[in-house]
Length: 312
Ligand code: CP
Image (cartoon, rainbow, N blue to C red):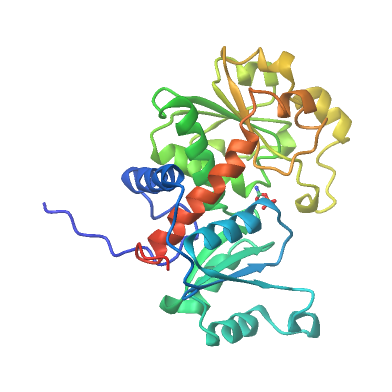
């Protein structure tokens, strides 16, 4: 049967609509942009609106850098200085901003589903990119993680990968696991105290391990996650950060439990001395700053894709 051509993607809310060729296409575009190193002169004819209802350093600024390299004008919505402080609803805020006709809205929000809601309110007129919604998804983080792994390893064949830490509250883990499954990675391990692991890892294509040494055996790529105190809602999920470090903190000695040459990623921000030692975070076995660098290229690629390949 002939393949039905897919309509171009209008929003990027999760990795749900991207199959393996589409994922590789974004990573290839990002890599081509990286090697090109020169871009069209800024025309400021399109506008990106950053709507960050939660704090961010990496995601927000890499969208700004990506937009600047593509010649887009960037406007940053200041939640504290907005009429939200007077009680204006999210819906009214989004409708008001839509009436001003941005081309792209990048949204981060503490509520899972907020990005899909923004896409519903904005409709087809505006491309919406999810920059992280609650526990749910962070698709551009997953894309930059995939790019960093692919760069370093040359591909995904036979990969064994572990995510260590607060997987239960992690939108980063959820999106990355989705991308890795689509790319055919079968050996996916989640390591941490039972209170921070998903109760149905098989639904994510993964296996849970509460013992760090057992989970790391034979693993080539380790993703360390931050303890997300702001999402634990005051629940006693951990005795203390120090006990977490004793059980699950990564350092050079523990990296030796993984496959020879294994390397570590972390989405940031990092809690030095809790989920990762400073020595390891700053070593050649850490790809943390490569992730940050790749974040700009993948966000440029995503924006080009959503704007139909014409960013300026
Ligand atoms: N990885 C990530 O989302 O970092 P920020 O919170 O700094 O954007």
